[in-house]
Amino acid sequence: MSNSVANRSPEIETMLKMSAPCRDLMKGGRYMREQGETYLPKFPQETEDDYEARLASTWLFDGVGKTIDDLSGKVFETPVVLAETNTDLDIWAFNVDLQGRDIAQFSRDIFDEAQASGISFIMVDSPSRGELTRVQAQAGNFRPYFVNLSIEDVLGYKTDVIDNVPTLTQIRIMETIYADTDDEFEHKQIEQIRVCTLPVEDGRVVGSVNLRLFRQNADNQWSLYDEYETGMPRIYIAACDLGRDGYLKAKPPHARLAEINLAHWRSQSDQANIMHHARAPMKYFHGYSKEDLEEFTEGAGYAFFSTNENAKIGVVEHSGAAIDAGRTELKDMEFQMQAMGLQLIVSRSGSSTATGDMIDEAKINSRLGMWADNLKDTLELAFTWMAEMADINAEKIDIVINKDFAANALSHLEMDALNKMYLTEVISKQTYINEAKRRNILSEEVSFDDEQDYMMQEPMDEPDNVEAQDGDNG
View 1: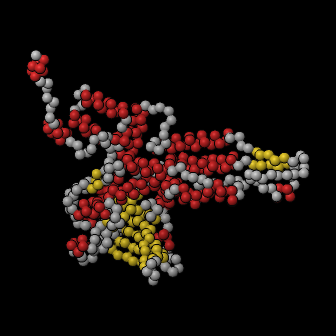
View 2 (view 1 turned 120 degrees about the vertical axis):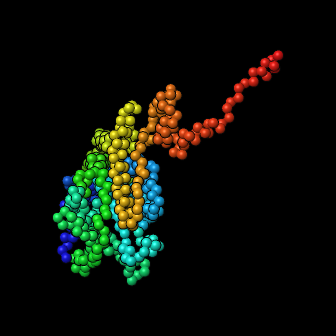
């Protein structure tokens, strides 16, 4: 068998190359330092020791990772849930991947990966039930489940137009499985390639999905390990493509932010390097022999003697202008990252207007709303396929996901405006309560009807007893 089964397709290579900065930055400073000259070039005439020292002193301002965390935090401020279907799907949603993750945790990982790479995938898989009845399958947990696939897991894919709809007809996925060894306390990792193929002829599906597994033999050649028909009418893989650039193609939505973050990484390295030299000024010796310098010892309480009356020791100190320039450059880039999505991380300088704040918030909320809709559609499609695979008749699959981010943007000016509209009877009490709930001022459990009932039950203030007061005065 040709090793071409393990080759990445040009489309995947392109997406990996474009998303590499975002994905690598998210892995943290230690990983970035391990990449060495990939992201931190070596200066001309810089020795290896000097470069390694500079690399070790470089720290990462995690702009991309923090932005993704904050944007996901807005979407997942309230948990993603599956609206009740009165089927097994309601139970499966609490362990949607058979690894203990519920739908909220699983979808958060999908969303984070899609932000970093532009696209992520949900594969709906199911162990073979064979001749098991439905009761036996439930007892043995033989049921469909979700698998989270990143762009790094996919080697390549093919598509075709079926019934005038672009359709996935083949996909190759790199997997890692674990097998027991002779030692009960050890296991070995085995890499295998899963190839799912939907047979198509003349734009029509002519069979069920064929599954092949490839593993490397003793000669490191990929050979067929297993093959069987799944009986599935389609390849159950749904894409969450936040940076969509075509069918199953995407660009990382934070690519521009990553460029600034990388520039900050390199500039911070320069800043740390120049600070080191500024704090340890370079000494110069005049009128000393080589033998004198070999005996030179520096430190508190040490003295240095020379018989040469013209001998001098001095230092060459840095003026500090470059340090201030470097500090200014770093701050400028941090504010550039703020403009690209870090508004929740870097504090603003100067004053801002409420209108400007609301416009900025509206822009990012609009983008987040579209992304949340994309995730919702992907999850609903995956649950529909899960129901199809398990022969479950679910009338409607509905994923409840937060798309109302206005609660995070509330300012005192907005609250004042809301109060004035209510007090001047521009809006009703019902609307006022709904808006307060939308901004997390009131609990979601608060209802207008209940509040009306509570107010009717409260005792009213009794009027003053005028007659008794008159009698007392008489």
